[in-house]
Image (cartoon, rainbow, N blue to C red; front, side):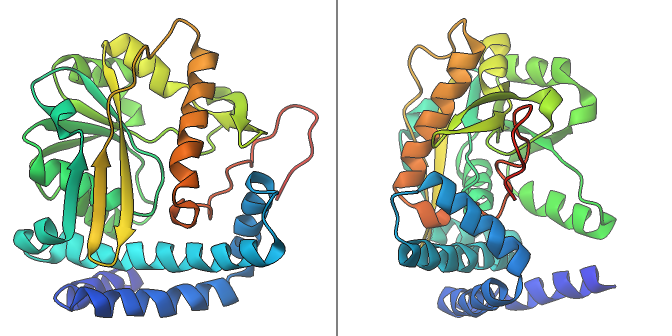
Length: 288
């Protein structure tokens, strides 16, 4: 029942001016920062580990901004998934090396977890005439799951594929000329990951970017999304040269190094509410 009420609310606010939706998101973000102390602790811990050079005041300020951006981007799903297509296209600006997506060359979009990730998905499927595939993790609530799937696959030719379908099907889709969304910058299980530095801290990191690029004979194109007052800027970066190599660990470490550079440009817009360092190397204590 609550899920249906929440979706109805999102449909209700979809026609509102963007400034109103963002103002509502700011208030929601302030409230979440004040009330959800457990997640605030996660953000504070992540920022302390990754930016030890910051003052306490700076970390507190950025932590509040993180909650505001997370809340605003969540409410933006209202118009991304329910407003008329022309509204989405007007607010979501595709920039950068868009030529990297032309043709039919196997391509992996490296999509870090910035708050505007859903806007990036909408920009690709609405404005780029390619077929897309991505690994989809089901939501526990079937009503929410159906809503998210429909919203993320609203435009164009986009096909979600579950982990259960296996690597072989994903590689086949990639070699057939599909563009693959890949989001490998979260903490997964120890069995799936290797430990490489992220801001100098050993982080369990899935080596899927290097592995899929090698098996699919695909180039890697970073897709960086930025929340702006006008909507979103979705920047297509130049394809990485000499990637992947034959060293999967070196490739994965390089991915984190380049990810840090993207984050440093807008640290408050990264998804720091995630327990990035939850899985620890053997013998090391828990962080959170």
